[in-house]
Image 1 (cartoon, rainbow, N blue to C red):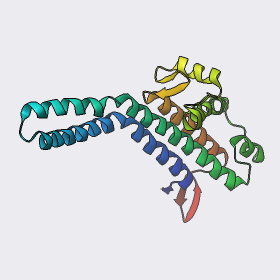
Image 2 (image 1 turned 45 degrees about the horizontal axis):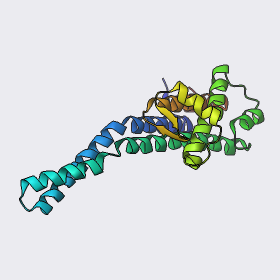
Image 3 (image 1 turned 60 degrees about the vertical axis):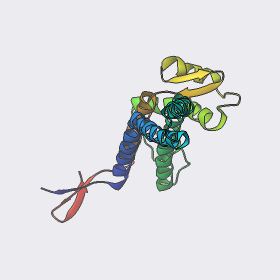
Image 4 (image 1 turned 135 degrees about the horizontal axis):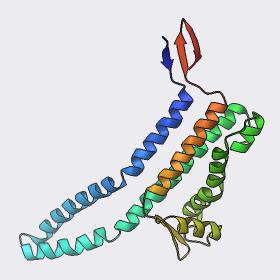
Length: 213
């Protein structure tokens, strides 16, 4: 019986994916906590200004609530847009790591060519999806969301397929976690398969020697 020794590259891919997944799923809780903090702050400020007059205090609270919470949707949109950028960055940073390790150009196709690797059909399909759709969405969110949209046809296609991605008046907005979680899952699967093909495997320490798991 040997002692399992996790491969640090595989561990990093899985751990970063889990952290991002947990953070994305925390959005409703984070927004609710923010609302509670703002509500408490508003009530304290209104009480100070009203000097004991409950009617004035209630009026101030009402107007301040409207001002504070009318941008709930925008806060949610900003959060999910930020998560999309982080998820794509996670994927690209691991690809860059593999490129350095293999002394290849900084893209997955160059890595596969350099090491004579053939990925599964499903993984190649997912890579195409990331490169064509997800990168178009990321580029517009990151660089061009209030300018002239790039790849309008791709953005319209994404919005038509998802009830969480909206493309209106040339602006992208994101209102839910599922699209981003799906992207993260595909990225993680791609990276794990690529790592496996590159020879990154868990090890076992058995009889004084390290062997592949």
